Length: 293
Image (cartoon, rainbow, N blue to C red):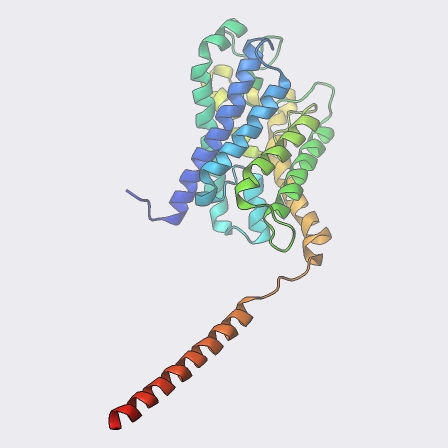
């Protein structure tokens, strides 16, 4: 039953990983919203998304790398760590995983959502429920500020996670990468959510937004706030690449080269092999002499 195609396995990993991430995050948002913050607060959502990141990374990192984010996948393509031909399949898989997760959360919290909204699914007003799934901006914040917010947030994400696996830097232990990345995400969401929700992930926003569009919220999810939807779709891609370039220019290019220990080890093995052969040769000569006597 094992899938032999590598890309197919990676796509499956990204679908399931992003699914797990969004189930944690959107379910927490639904619980906080529909309970009118009697069963959690805004910090609960931040923490749930972070737990989702950690869990998803442990789940699929060995299969796909656990990008969970088209901005991360694009950045790795720019850095040469992911083949460009895999960028579109990875991104579509992440969006699909987010879409499916939104559908599951909607089923789990359907009754609560309907009771909270009075059966009217809307983007605006005190009983709006669209923000359970996708991100929306604060009324007083400009388009330029929202765009900058998402660029900076995603740049910070890449700037903080790239050194964790860089062997020329001071890499973190493999087993601790998921909780460290989750902590970085928690820090960003706790400090940069006020303007427009800290999506920093096109799949995390577009997948749920597409779900709300098909589940009854209608076209408002795309047209509201002067077509805000394109900002969490485009700005994180810019921010991810920008953060990666900053890491290269300011840090990685100046790190010491790794010592190549393979050559000395190889020479040592050769020397040991040579000594063993000489020893065996002497034993053979002694055996022949004794045989002749």
